[in-house]
Length: 306
Image 1 (cartoon, one colour):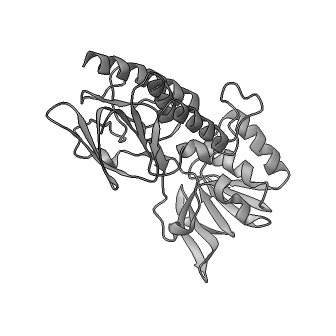
Image 2: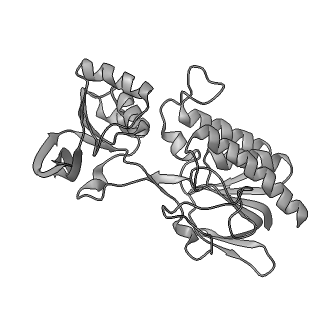
Image 3: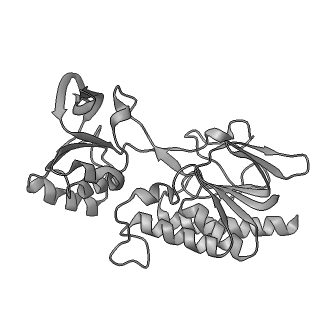
């Protein structure tokens, strides 16, 4: 079978593109290596998505996106990793996966980003999703690593469970003013402590369980400190999911994100990009959905011309 469109990923941008494409009878397959919704599905409460004045749970939003895409006929293949993309001589594409190969007339890469790791000893024991794992730490002491919006938002969420949270920031807190104000409330009541200019060096374990994290002063590495804790959550930024493009000929920017023209097409004709993996993306859910719609319309025009 040859699909009209294969979409790599199943986050908000991919699902929106699938809704638009499948609704116009473009035979569409989404290939997702993890869970539907991507990083969106790990967010406890999304407060800035239009239409939800009280906010919406990321997982719930992802499920609704999925239902809508499937209602129009889009297929979703879960827990399947894309290994490569090859453009055939006939102009069609072969998408290589760990569960067989699939062919299509066009490809949309909406593979998003993954959480960046710290690269320190013992890191395999830490968590990257407060919504997924926070409940395991009821009445425990936690450490959150990171100072941008996602880190602060997740730290605030974890106050529902933890007795105390130490937030470790390599430089300074870069979260929005709204989140900073909310954070200040928990700092004032003693629930959260913030340590800026603090760089983690090692996760310390005892009998297979985390007991502390070792750090040093970012400005003065000789000044070392240890934070005792029962668990660690890391939100230290993201990296683009583009490793499968190594031999595809698709151009990336210096950060590893994919470059496109104004129609969201890459330098390889027939391969389009939308969402957080695109170079220059604003990395917001609402803009990712907008790009998904834009990409689907451009893909429709591309398929029509062919």
